[in-house]
Image (cartoon, rainbow, N blue to C red):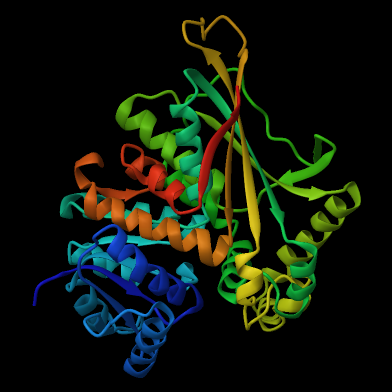
Length: 421
C-alpha cells in the first residue's frame, strides 16, 4: 500500500474536526495530494467524513480511514507506516503524545502537533532527537497557536529588523465583541483539552528545570545588555503579567538551535499578556496560585478537571465554545524588538533601534491553530529542501525559518506585519 501524503490523527476530537474541515479546502489550494484521517472508532470516522462532505460540498469517499488508538502500539505503527506526514491532534500530549512520536520516528514519518506543553516537547527532544535525525524525519511540536505566532513572529521580526536584534518582548491581548462575550458565558471560549493541558502543566511544572538542564547542560552565553524579566507592570495605560504558556520555552529552543548550529547571535525573549487593570492583575495572580496549589494533588486536580467552568472563571466548559464565539475571538501579539542599526558597534554602544511587529488572527484554538498546523505540514511536504538537512526534534522557528510558512499563514488570515520602525 502506497503512503498517503498526510494523515490527521485524533480527527474526531474538537481540534481534529476543524483540521479535517480546513484540510478539504487546503488540499486543493496547495495540491497536497492524498490524505486520510485516523481515530479510535471506524463509525466515528465514517460519521466525520459524512459531516465534512456535507459541510464542504466535496466528495470525500477517497479519503482513507485508519483505526488507531494511543493504547495500541501496533495500530499506531500501522497508521504511521501509511503516511509521509502525521498531524497529531490527540492531547493532552503529556498523557498521549509519546507513543505517537515513537511510532512516527520508527516508521520514518514526519510528525507535527499542536502541543503547548513544554515538558512534553523537551522530553521528546531528549529521547528522540538523535533517532529522528538518523531516520531523516522532523518531529515538530508547538505548530498551533502555541507557539507559531511568537516563534515565527521572532523570525519575522529578525528578517525585517535590518540590523542586530538583541531582544523581543511579546505582548498578547484578546478581544471578544460585547454581544459575543455575553454568548460565551454559557459555553466558554476555550475547549476542555486545553484546560487539561494547563492543569497537568501546572501540576508538573517543577519537572521543567530538570529537563532543560538535561537538554542543555551549558547555558547560552549571556547577551548584553541583559533584558530583565518584568513581573506585574504597566505599559501604555494597560497592565500586563508574564505569559505562562509555552512561548518562552519554544523561542529559547529555537535560539539555542540557531546559536549552536548556525552561529547566530541568540535573541532574548520575554512574553506577557494583558490583564487590563491593576485589580484584575492581582486577582489573576491570586487565582493562578490557587490553581497551582490544587493541581499538585491528584484529588484536587481531579476536582479541577471535573469542574472546568467554575475553576476557569467561565472560560472553559466540557462542551466547548459555540461556533459563533470561536469565529469572533480575536488575538494580537505586539512584538517589540530592540537592537542596533546596521553598522553600529554592538559591543560598545547601547541598542538604539526599535521595530514593532504585530501578529493578529481569529479563533486561536480552532482557527489560527488549524491553519498553522496545516501550513507546517504543507511546508514539510512541499519545501523539505528549504529545511535543515538532517531533520530531528525541532521547533517551528528552527525547522521552518527558510520556508514560505509565514507567507502561507498571511494568505490564510494569520497576519504578520511591521507596524513601526
